Amino acid sequence: MDSLNLFLETSFWKDFGLSALTLSVALAFGLVLHRIFFGVLGRLVQRSSWGVKAIAYTRKPSRLLFPLLAAHLVVPSLDMPVKLLELLNHIITILFIILLSCLFISLIRLLRDYLLARYDISTVDNLRARKIYTQIHVLEKVLLSIVGVTSISFILMTFDSIRQIGVSLLASAGIAGIIIGIAAQKSIGTLLAGIQVALTQPVRLDDVVIVEGEWGRIEEITLTYVVVRIWDLRRLVLPITYFIEKPFQNWTRISSDILGSVFIHTDYTVPVDALRRELERIVHPHPLWDGKVCVTHVTDCTPRTLETRLLVSTRSSGDGWELRCHVREKIVEFLQKNYPDSLPKLRTEPGSPVGGYGDRVSKSTSV
Image (cartoon, rainbow, N blue to C red; front, side):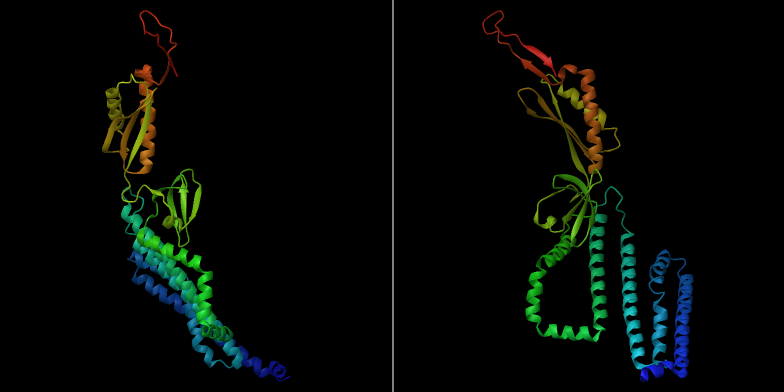
């Protein structure tokens, strides 16, 4: 009844309206102050590209921060019921924690961009750049996780009931710690594996790898999984622990240059020296060849064919694939045009003696 009478009293509405007006003026003053502050700051750093970028990153998350600070200053002076003032202060505190965490996230991303701006991952010799990119991206995710968990913890601590529950749980920390440790063993192991990959770097961003029989590039590394972009644009998602526990091929672990091999099967009559000269003629002027390796070796002899390996070097695995395809095509064209008899043949011997004893007729059929 008293609350109803208070609600119906004219003086209550008068005080409430005055308090609402005061709070509105404080919020408006905070917005104006934010606009003036960033306007002046923008003029001071307009000649610095990173200064302009810092303002762009922090302007949005701090837009409500100034009004909240102004409201926090005037709330104690408002003529309102105590419980309503406590509720208002609680809401302002929660919003302040959220906005502050958003500001920290923006600063972390600004720092990430500042550190990565000095490294170009699109160049051919990008080993150091990929190393820095991997470390910074994983470190960014760790910091964002810490900010998120810390913000949620601070928000929960503003509630008295939850704080009491936390004190009760703290009393049984030994048992709770054992239960949580067992339940989160795999999750903690995955998190530690992500940090281990960031530090030891068995793989980096844009590394060329062969995993699960697939050729691709490392597209994304998180604390829990790695995304591999397959050559046909499929995505292979693997747990981060895969690169700690299982073997895989990394073609760009030390450097991006690579040797590419082309195997040609020919008849025994093929002129190897002519094949070697033709390979040099094809490869030497080609823009994808790095000028290091261009050799021809006879690597095997089977009962029917001669196996020749053509070895060339390139600056990257992508260039290696293109150059190998080009060499394979031109060498086959060279043999078809100049030495068609050197293509693989199937020989049969009927076994009928002709002439003297032991002589046999040999018939060759091209395949």
